[in-house]
Image 1: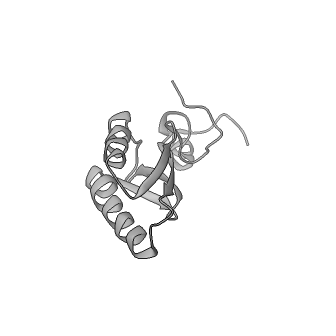
Image 2: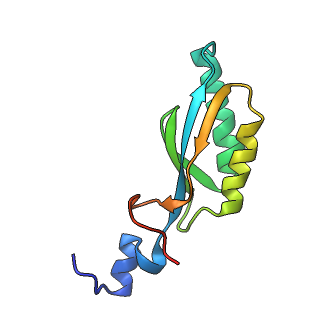
Length: 112
């Protein structure tokens, strides 16, 4: 694809100055946790850590991507809020928050 794109096309493709950032999340639940407890945890997570901070979670109960709920990028502060919320949870054995990355093209480096 050509690299000389119009502003309109760059916006549609979410590239260059319209790049949108998010982060990956991997959740490892305790072995003794049943399906009901996992569902309850996910409901609280989606409400308190994600939706209340104007973000969305795309994925399944163990892995996904957290992005902004509208056009734009997740900030480092929003990522830190999710990290702080997850730290106090007894349902998790561990979790991994990825660094901010391009939400549309994960292998592409972040623009300066």
